[in-house]
Image: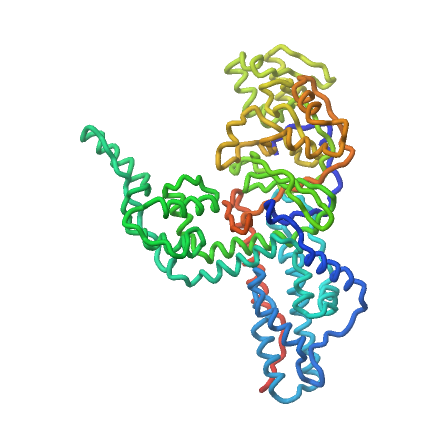
Length: 569
């Protein structure tokens, strides 16, 4: 990454984290049933190992039938049933229940096959199918904690029912359960007639021009940027209304108008909001493309998010901060008794998708620097700052730059020799605290290998953009005072007035937090908020890479399936 170095740049110890996807104020609370399941799970860990009760006197038990039902329903968890030989096992159990009593050796083979399939299934459900570090170049979150598959099975068997035991192995968050429901919803739409054909091309917008030349120019422009606005006719209106009704963005009794009217436009605005589009009600190419994404593709996006939620364990502290990169959003949570409460939500600016992506990791926030200096990274100095200073020497004074040599001496005058020294690595350029400082007036530091941190910015107008990947990798926050208040809320020495004074002081000062706060930088492209499903763009292509890895794994498993004995009728 190209964020500036700091005296707190040493890598700190990796930890477990809670990164189960962003949730809203209405959706981000644990219910008592999740904690009951978790308690059951922990209790089962202490139970002695027991044989899997799949067959009795050569006949499948109720637990065996329950097991094959669970494997056959693996798709409801975003998993692949045939990764667990679900069809072959279901057939074997059905035949064993009706045919002749199995010989001891065949019965043992069937029991072993069913146990192996359940163990693989529970491991995938609990910890995920792939190692995230194998699909992300800049992924330094800790690897998932993988419980021994045999232990996972014993824990599930210790539950009152196998279904309850399996449910306890899944991520214990409302967000995960809501995604499971959303997955079922979008899979059910797969055969819906609203997606049997694509929407027709958009009409050219109406033009009013005073001359033939201007009319031709306007027509050429309209042909390049077709759109549907209020009052226009469009052959796609019946199909559009059908899709919006199926998706829940329009009421079921919505009539198809002769022209695009406000009732349908309101549904489009809801659809745009749920798909990270500008909710202006105008159907342009971006909205049309999102409308044409089939439900099966959205179902896969949901399943990929469910896979990501399996990679990390539960909350490891009373408070935490989560940044969801493709959502351009920061959320701060606090644990209260048996609930996880959303305390803060704000927009952020993240690293550019093209070349300076924000990495994914988990570290503890340990320091806050008020009125910070900006030590310009060598890469930015070489590629941007020094060429600009050579073209425009006045830029040095306007921006409040200065040079710092290897001995720590400060040089406030611009000189070609100093620029050359920066290129040789013998000096660095830094920006003094002030209104033009690139870091704004505050910096939140969580030491990490990539020198990534949270900070304010003088370019606050960028927060109004719907897509906000503008940084060199660090994360700019919309409301730094609110974030500082959350971080320092348990420190009576730092009320809001003192925070603002330190930010405006113009003199750098750093404090160490008495209570470090976990910071998680996550990548979630499907979010549930207030019961609605929101789909985000795959900003860095991480979903595409994950989907490729999962397909490759499935192909390997199909090439070498779990062995299932043949049971003669």
